[in-house]
Length: 290
Image 1 (cartoon, rainbow, N blue to C red):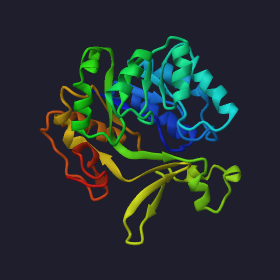
Image 2 (cartoon, rainbow, N blue to C red):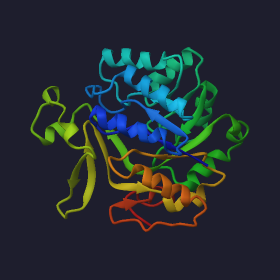
Image 3 (cartoon, rainbow, N blue to C red):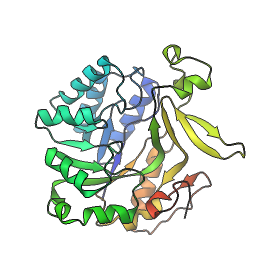
Image 4 (cartoon, one colour):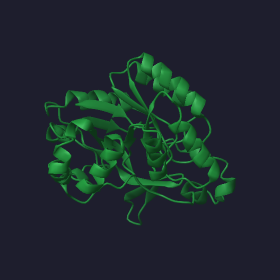
């Protein structure tokens, strides 16, 4: 079982991003994803910056994948997507079907991100035939559902052609919108947002009238209010999941990476906090913890 760092989902200053990936280079993580997946207005880093980081990480022995935008809203964003797909060096995580089309045209292998809705073996096999060599399963899939898909004959026959990756730590991206909820929370129109989301390195909390944290606002992305944490479910992933994904946090990411590694066999379980959940994996409501 290997571990990956997903793309940074929040808007951080360039120095913070660079410092994070220098620490990643010195860590024991095997895979690192790079790129802006949420909002094209976040331009602290451009593709050339990500490629520079990618070379640094590759020299440190990491497998590097470039992640694409999830919601494309303008021709300029489609042109930028083309640059990612044409980078010529690094594999791409497709978070939108248009990216899959561009990559397939070039005969390139790709990772299918969790935003690509794959919920059955027919869809999964179709993408494998199109060149997918890594699948990041949707968050809603339980272990039993995932196992059932992978045990279908049309998948078993090609199981050695792709890796299965599971988002296992972080606030889950649930939805994307043409509107920016972070800007709206500050009474700003989207076109005049002044990139206010950079003030919220972990997103902005949304609580119910009862005080329960139900969502996190992250620009145009809405995340789960609870932090998904499958550290105690790692033994149940053995033989089923190839890569465990950890979503970067402003603080403590690499400490959690070490905790995950130490608990691969279940020898060092961690008591989850009140704002953490693992329900989806256990076929329960997503906000529950068992």
